[in-house]
Length: 106
Image 1: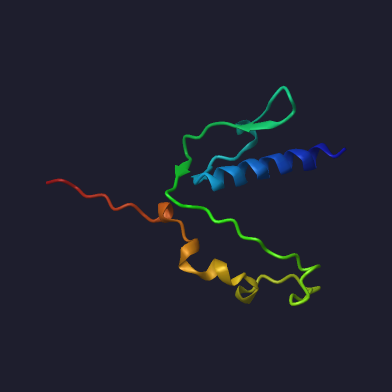
Image 2: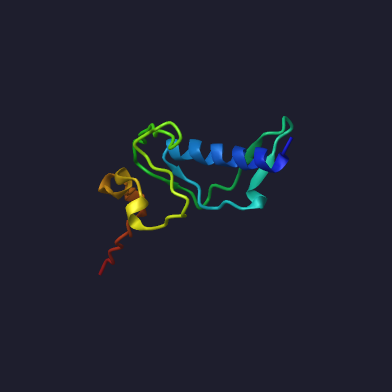
């Protein structure tokens, strides 16, 4: 049993769940990951988190192993043409990341 993989998977599931709720957790560090009595993790310290007004959409992607239209490449690709097309659309941008405009009263 690989404990490292288990806890990494637990953290990823917790972050995925928070994203589905529209919460951006911005303080991930070992001190903020607690292990409960039952062995599962719990994230703490949500002071820096953002609550976004988004409606998350679950996307079903096919595996490159089962989809004959996708080609397996032996080279690691980081070019822009390797990004899935849905990530290039403006709908992927979350409104809570825009800068806030502060007005000064005179």
